[in-house]
Image: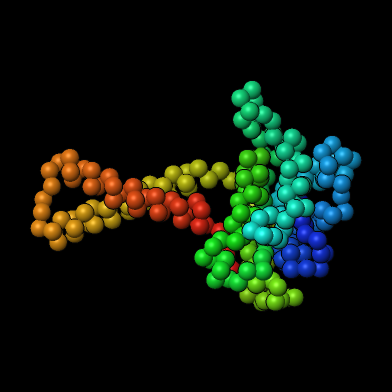
Length: 249
């Protein structure tokens, strides 16, 4: 198992670097850290070819980059942008397809921000950075193992014991990653339970409202009210799982 850490930050000993070091420590495996500022990230440069060889050799990529102004740090974004042609092929319609070289490798994401924990929880300051990295890597065929966020970094110079424990656990997860991890069946099961629970809750709400109003509905009115309640609940649930899903602490 070869694990590589990719630091898209401007300080080697800052919070981003310390987060990455803790995860790498938890892997207890052969690891290598790439500090992106040491490389020329231009497409087809000699440095990019070196980076590609390192990425090919690694089973797990750990990307660590701070969140600046609600978005991904420029150095990490430049790295991912320059990789586009190297990790994807595009068909005649312009649709991307992962190259087999990187497909089914695994990745972890780390980010941090100055914002307080509550602010990040409410507004999702770090979500954009995480989603950008997710989009690139999942489109390239990589499989996600997890992520971690550190907030309130303006006031700290060291990670808390609790955060270190969380990061060490992520490192252990990276160490135990299997070569292939097809989660389609897991997603189908999750979707089945989501739909089942939403249908049950919808029936309870509908029956309660009718009971309070002392009314009964005909078939079509009953059907329409069920659909409206059901899809409202389903939209809220899916929004939570697809948008408000990142750890914000």
